[in-house]
Image (cartoon, rainbow, N blue to C red; front, top):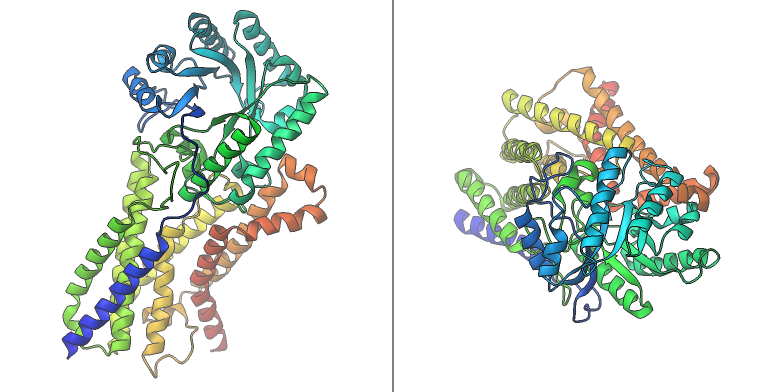
Length: 566
């Protein structure tokens, strides 16, 4: 009988997990299929993992060749951002594969570098007029604040005098509104429209309408300065992974929705567009975190991120995740098999649920962190977090077994659990500080803290099941780990975690309120604050992280209150 009861409970837990995984990973509708044929243009930077302009480790000619061969039947044109740094063979190879180019030169604050880039651009444009159809002098240099507009105009004029192709400058759309004199200087207006990055981020459902609105706004501005001047949407896209901003949620499905919708709008209005970008760029994680590295139609390993037709899967490898979690869970259950057989079925179900939940969290953590790790240090951190989560999961299961088996807590286990939680809480405070102070490119570390947070809830459930020893759902941390510690310094954790919640809300809201476009749309604190707070609390990732911080702090508040009453 105990074996049959154990087997039935195990089948139930595994069936629930498998059913949830199947339902949560059904193919999703991503909008109208892209019309047959090639895309108009794709941003092209052939940097693979291990290559980075920051380290001056540039793509090899064979990388450029392989990438252009892959893109040849996907797009008519490629847009490049530099004419040096490994990009020199690009025009010749583009010709080989029947591609045209919008060639750029990289402009920043360093005069000599700018001169070399412009000379290379001019030389390439003049030598390859059949391939290089347009040129762009500089990319978002005004947005980065590396140059004033008058100096930039001087560069644009110098290139215009030296080449026959139309010349432009590329920046976010608002920079053309801020510096309308640029409209007269360029042959075509190149604007970046990135709904995710707007000062007031746009949801993917409203992103294509935003695209139409901005193009019309720029057309209206240009009409009074240079009527009929062509407009190129030089960058538009959506990230497939990373931190949420307001209503703008990075995901594979949302990237597919935006790209498909954008192409439909472009076709309907005859917009000239370039999608950012062809390939995910691992090196951008150093500057822009996970979100910056994941704008490609192809992954860093040159695999399609999503299809342009048909339903889209958010996590295509979910069956492997499920299988790995089940195997890991069964291995853990096998270790505790004899002890678990004696438990009554409600307690057995709870332990098996803990095991399977921890296994699923651990597999998800390992898979996601490894996918978004792009350097040796990042992979080392991934290994550390996986090991740390595995260790705390093991400690939590040992403590749950003690509680449900009616055993007293042991000092070594209590000390180990306490130390583990202090480490995770310290790390949570550190990460929250970064998110609150300068979190634009930082992801919310939800996967990294799921096991510690779920573990606290699970221990509370275990105590409640252990009749006679817990009559309340709210328990002090010492009650949960099974030993009393009298260190008053631990009371600080309750305050620090609570202050972190407040600081996170303030930091996120302030990040919206200091944006130039946000200030213009909502002048004054009284008008801007409610809007900024609405964006903050619509951020599901942020709200989840706040809930995690609250869950970690609650047992310490209970402990403080308990000791105060004594």
